[in-house]
Image (cartoon, rainbow, N blue to C red):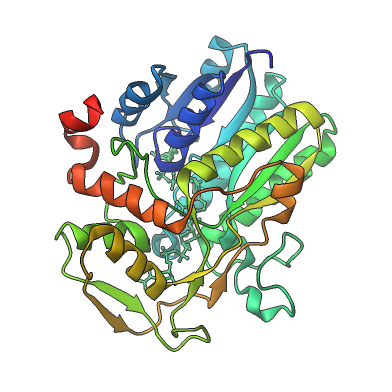
Length: 355
Ligand code: NAD
Ligand code: WQD
């Protein structure tokens, strides 16, 4: 592999930082841009502690085209972009939808325009299983293959669907462009060293980080949203994937774009294994070593019964497979939250650094 530079937008965030780590470890040069809206630069120090390398960083907003221009001009070696930068809170997206369309859709259009000006033709995009909406409506589509009709049920999901269409259309109009639409299922976990993990600036919204807060006593209990679904224990089913497996999926997709030039294509990144909310509460309680308190409440608006991937296309075409178990996801998450109750706002424990 010739060393090429990869631009990572949103690279100080949760999935972006783990992908940056994997890129550096695989020998890529990496430039990270992020406006630090939901993350901190400390993530990059942790990357350096783990792999001995640090990406170049710019505090840049993807909505600011002239800032993007400057970065591409300074780094003519950029040959591909992995695009994570986005707003991602599903509930909030119904309260301030235009902000979601501005940042997510508008930011991506800016990025593609600037890439185009600089002759950069490969884009890996963070899409989401949320684009499928309620796949149970379609006969034979659970678990979900990529050809399942899409139909997101909230503005956040619609931004992801629109961006997929923008990339698809741009690749069709420019046959030398390649786009990977990576539809992530439910990412979780942390680095097994215990010094790198998810550290959002606001309140978490997702099940696993909320359970982490219950385990360290920052929350009294987890509210289980509905136990009247058609599953083995009545709670909803998701496909939880370790963030390191997910990060590796990006390297596989990038290699595919650079080597095979497939045009625009969607790939599910999931394990193919569904777990219910109670399965997760149980698995994480086991990692913590005590039963975590929960209370069953009503269903959350917009939730669906089952989002589990058919990951066959990524397995076969990207030669990628999720390797880590749910147990590892829970153990790594627990090591991260128990050792870093303040996230990146505190130095990592010395014994972890010495390990
Ligand atoms: P994150 O919030 O940790 O990372 C997103 C990063 O983008 C943050 O560092 C944030 O500061 C940055 N950002 C936001 N607006 C920006 C702007 N205008 N300019 C520059 N940077 C900006 O979220 P994450 O969980 O790492 O998600 C990364 C991507 O994956 C997002 O696109 C998200 O929609 C998508 N995704 C996430 C999940 C999930 O469950 N975490 C699932 C599917 C898809
Ligand atoms: C998982 C399960 C909840 C919290 C969201 C986005 C999706 C993607 C991943 C970005 C569900 C239940 C949750 C709680 C609960 N993100 N739950 N109590 O909703 O599957 O997916 O994150 O693209 O787009 O929609 O993830 O972690 O919020 O929920 O019972 O306090 O846990 O009902 O069944 P979700 P989640």
